[in-house]
Length: 289
Ligand code: GUN
Image (tube, rainbow, N blue to C red; front, top):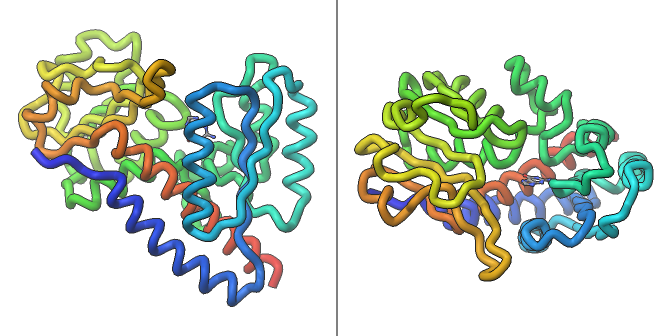
């Protein structure tokens, strides 16, 4: 069994970006700029957001955090998004999810200009992925893209293998399933209504769990030699630590590769966010030539 360190791979990606950003700044005379919006005081969201701004600082991406009260209205948030859409100095806009219930998530995500949508959540970016129309303008969602990079970093064979994804969210489950399919895996998506879940997960050569239920994936659900990717980030407010979906202590011995939580998928999500910001910047500077 080998633990795949997302922390190490993310550090390598960020080192590369740091030198790329330095070159871009001297070439174009402008610094890539990411604006992060946080609404409310969810401790998990606060901690993720600070990881993102810290990484941006490291890479040399200009960044700012706009923090609003939980009582913010949808039209107030839309006004902020529109202001940033119109600001030619802003390359990336990230609205941290979840949003308070008075704000419709899809309304906000679709309001962010697709070319500033560093999360890859806009319907146009999602359509490029789901209709296999990826170009240099497409922004891919960070967590699924980070998962593919983790698998590839260990040369884990995807083509022809059975990949089982637990969870069908727009943020992780659905896009990672499509990315695995694009790499020629046979993909099964499981969810809360799936019958005989363990029977299916036991067939997985690659098992991706993205449901946010601590210790949900037990040893008897995993095939000997499987590669297990744990996307869970349940936030324990008491300890201030995050906890994955996989019962790591009992599952890890059966696997060929496994990602830890923390230090697995999370750091790669952030590294891919930095890559996306640089990509949006490049699209902007080449548009303005
Ligand atoms: N909440 C949980 N994951 C994410 C993410 O990748 N991006 C944003 N914006 N919010 C999230």
